[in-house]
Length: 105
Image (tube, rainbow, N blue to C red):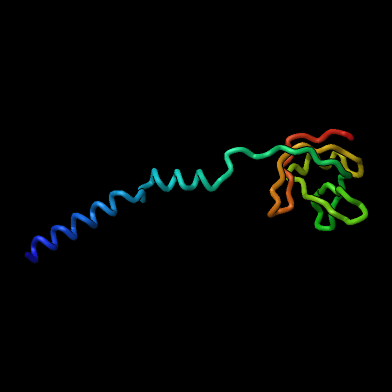
């Protein structure tokens, strides 16, 4: 009787663990679901300025002082003080635009 109960409990535990996806493939799938598959490209208009920390940023609203840092400092340097259109995607948590292109506005 005890042997049968242990066997039944082991079988139930094995089935339970086998039905839950815990392997590397399952982890990769769950990580893929958490990350966006496509980054949304946007266009931002403003003036390229050199921020107090020495990094170039796009000042979008001179009244409120709202700006976003630009990740491509070399491209931004060429447009310092000019009004531009920046194409890229926004990483809001870091207030950073990942620049694809910068053109005069």
